[in-house]
Image (cartoon, rainbow, N blue to C red):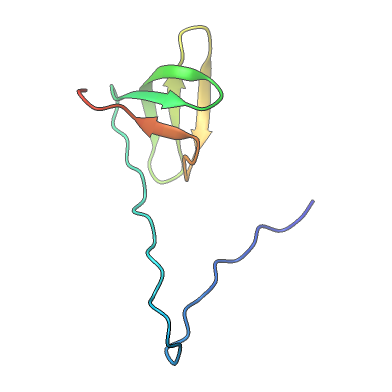
Length: 76
């Protein structure tokens, strides 16, 4: 098992611009979402900062943060 890579830090003396960090994703119960593996679903539970529980119709899955494969759909 390998350790996850640590985020690179920006040195104050660097001539390069500070990289943009993406805003953390937030979901609410009832949000409709799409997942790269499971497809279309609806958030049915939240473990604040840790994971969300999503009902995908045929299965319910606990999706851990940072939710890289999941996106909230507009028009909730």
